[in-house]
Image 1 (cartoon, rainbow, N blue to C red):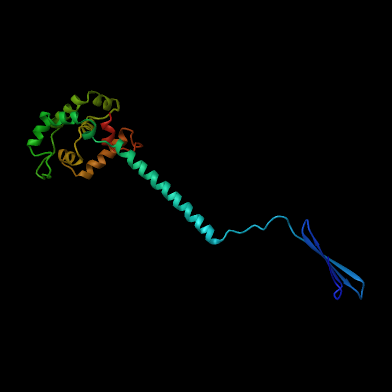
Image 2: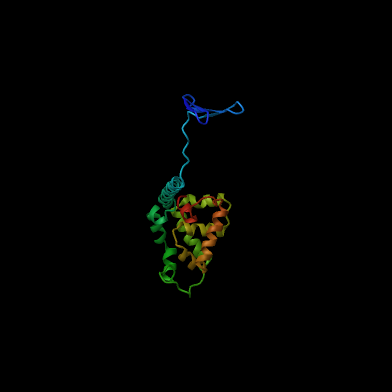
Length: 209
């Protein structure tokens, strides 16, 4: 307790809860005024600094970026397995197709060369059928699957040529169209077979059948 004889003031310091009681006495009017200030047992909460919040935000962004990159690389490692070409899946069947008389006959005419020959004409229907027969011989159940899908004769022919492992460039030579036209036809055929939701290409899907 503190007592101020001049100002007629008494001060009391309280322990629990800590605080101060201040009594001010007016000697003229005989009035005493009490002023009580109470504290709290709880420590003051510190507000995080802007630098701390910024550092926390950057840390969360770095973690999210690392997780995203890891997920992307994981998908890239898995995806090629589903898009395996006929070269890797069944080389013996592909070689059997290339050894067929129909394939050799077209190759002698200048088809399937490295350089594009603008003088080539569209392959005739009977020659395409001969190529498809070679595919059917290598994959007996493949044409049956296409028939169950109610595909037309031309659709079956196209799928057989894709199944044989012919490249987009080689297919463009056979049909005497651009490579982009072959790509669009593959996309339409994929939808026609009800495989639009499959992330693989038409080539990759047909190679597994």
